[in-house]
Image (cartoon, rainbow, N blue to C red; front, side, top):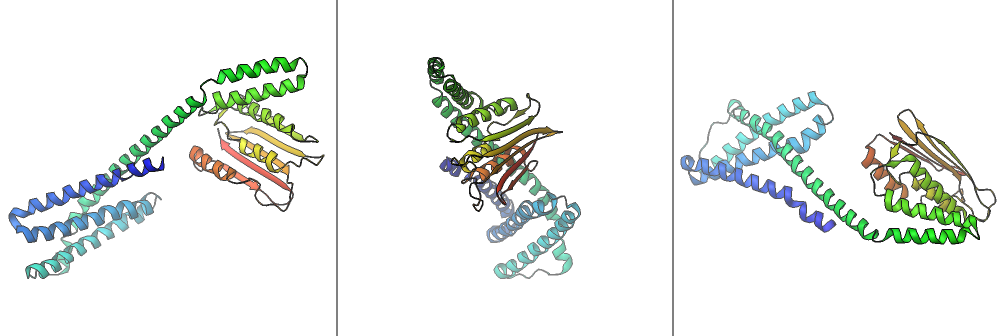
Length: 339
């Protein structure tokens, strides 16, 4: 996939190269009949260079530094100063080059240099159009890449779902056989079937009912209890609209970390508290558990929290809150997302 992105990325650069090539040829051939070859080349280089400085100076520096941060007065002043400076430098460079190659010395004074400034105003306006065009093609390219990734993901999902119902039917058959002799074990098989059905049917969706997500978490916790010799005291507080919809697998990272890093299988008192509460326009999720090793560092076990943070930024921008309290003997995680 990285190679495909690399092959597609130069498209915008190639577009700009074509545009600038067309600009150079247009300037050169429009001047050639009146000014001759050498003077046309000089004028083309000087003009094109000044155009590039104005366009890229605005879209790469002034626009993002001032305008996008709503510093409109500073942006206006900086643009005016930038156009005056660029215009005067263009005039001075042209005069010096003419003197060197054509052995002519046009007058160099302030008014002469300022006469080159008005032409830069039109180029500044064109720089805004240029920026919009680049943004459009960038967005189009990103959209195509996202669609390509989505197609690959859907294809992989279809491959993984070749005969999912065969597996579910097999688990159901095993469930009924086990239920006759060992109902508790049959219940665990049923939970495993529900978890696998969630992965196949629900996890590919953009959103799922929060009740479905909670059922998945509870099934996971019940299966994890099997591995705990002395059991665990898990308090799960729930207060939300069951029909509320959230992205799938958004809360699972914290619950998974509890059983990976917060449960001592040899200890008789493993206490875990979890709460999922709807409050105004937000959903609040909090977990708390005692650390096995109070002096241990981050118990995420790798990139769990990092990957979750990236996903939250993609989903909510900066409109979420994620806090990890890893001090002392308790590990507490808190997540607040808009709904």
